[in-house]
Length: 155
Image: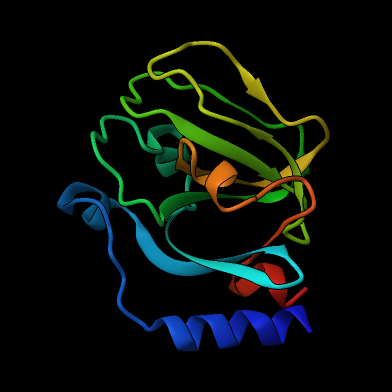
């Protein structure tokens, strides 16, 4: 049922991607993810994919503006302890830590820009999703939500 909801949302919401800026567009692959926030609410997000170590170290550093429904998905090879920081990140973010199946472990809401404080998953995570601060609350995204993205929802 969730996989069907994913594809319906992607098809209905259209293929156009509204990304942030040319520098990010050049450095990262792009895709679409859907977050199932409840039985009746799915939200489509344009996402940058942080696949390599260099991309994961860069993340959203130096970005000054990000469209509301755009984010970055950090993709790791396995579940492990994960932490993030906001060094050189100029916009506040909601940071969601995800299990291998895309379910959300925990979310750090409205993180502090440029902070060196470590933001941690409460259990091993395979993915990390960064969104604009406030988006998770506005769209009722929480620990009961699940992120559907190609390789995640095919598991």
